[in-house]
Image (cartoon, rainbow, N blue to C red; front, side):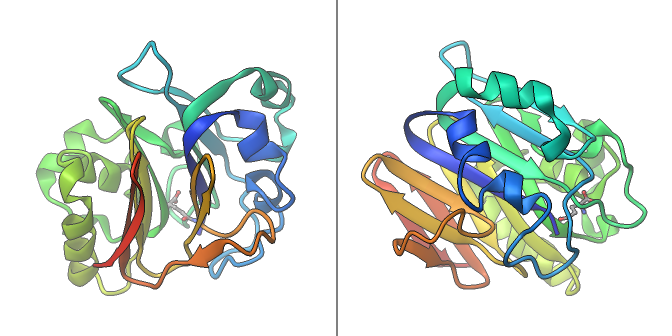
Length: 229
Ligand code: GLN
């Protein structure tokens, strides 16, 4: 399993969200606290963030460990956004090791990350042409982002078609976040100036809430809602 995290709210720097939390994505790349499958997320990282230049996000990915990226560490304190999505990768056996297989995957205004694995043969053939990689997560992202308003029902359909699948996805379009818990951990933190949705809490703030398995999380300017899938 990989780990991902997203923020929607007041502007904050990439460094603040991804690199400077006590148990944030940087620490989760080598020492996740709740990861159920795999131990280290050293096969790459990616981040997407939205600016006035949109509608699509800026995206930066690398196929190397997050902790080894001195360039990101120097740039991240200078980049701020009100919507940020970050991911670190522990590649599934048999999946490509290159940058194109690293989340987040982008289509139009949307970016999407996937924690888990899926038998790609359960996905419709028309998802493949838009996929950024043959990686299961990339094909899944291409299919889900054909219809972002259907992410919940499509995740459920994929999970029913492949009962061994793990399908925690986290998507954003600059104004909202959509996430699913299907087979791995997911947590939500509501603060005075925004909401974090993450594979696991990035600190010990008592306001973190665990999301039940098989749930959909939707976040917009009105707040965060959790519903059964
Ligand atoms: N299956 C995806 C990949 O290979 C995600 C892996 C994961 O969640 N660890 O990149």
